[in-house]
Image (tube, rainbow, N blue to C red; front, side, top):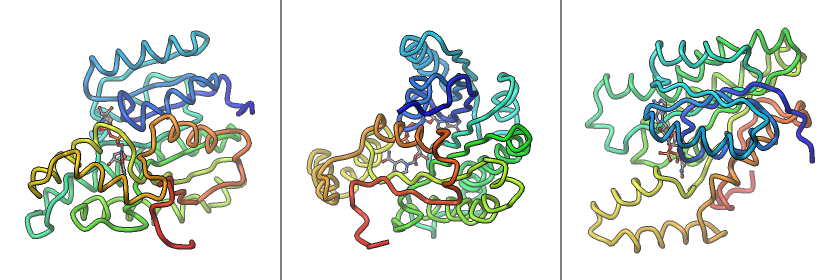
Length: 262
Ligand code: NAD
């Protein structure tokens, strides 16, 4: 299927590794030009080289910045001639007990996982509407649908984003102008983030990383973790010309781990 996004410009945040990288790869394969953002210059440059090799016909631009800062967002927005596709992503907040979190910890989580995506949407969405095409995908988490108790900062901040987006996506000014805003909720995907989380659980529980990993895999009826490639391919479809009637939705990719009918 031709996704119909050749020549579009995509801003993919937090894209040197993991799910963001998977999204950038899928968009580049479809002929979209990309601006990729991450904090670490080496990994970002290596990913850019991979993307250029995947499709030499597209432009790949890099911005080494922390997307959760105003300066990082300004830098990310400055390089492309326009943004047609926005993939909002950033590192997730740390796990812990809410009794240990002060206001500073909450503000940090809100900045990264709620306010940064909202700021980037604000900067791009009206231009998308004027041009009659826009796709915004926020990478959130399965924890929005089924909260994970040690990830309270994530549950809270991402739910705030989800509630906001539910209203914004339904503004006729956007929905009637072929601008869609959706959230893609990962379950367990095999990335550095998941490996670090599992290592942390192992350390706390006294089990081996292998035991903890196996137990986590067993939670999914698919009996495996998702791959960044699968995540990226799904995201690219949500950004496609064919997905214009999908807006304001939360799509869970978890191999069936969530046990509910809806
Ligand atoms: P990852 O650690 O594999 O990759 C994160 C990427 O984001 C890296 O490229 C890193 O450089 C970049 N990054 C992080 N913070 C940044 C910042 N402030 N500014 C710019 N770049 C930044 O993580 P991942 O597994 O791909 O996770 C992506 C998001 O999805 C995270 O918010 C994570 O919490 C969430 N998530 C992941 C899973 C999973 O199983 N992997 C499950 C649920 C939610």
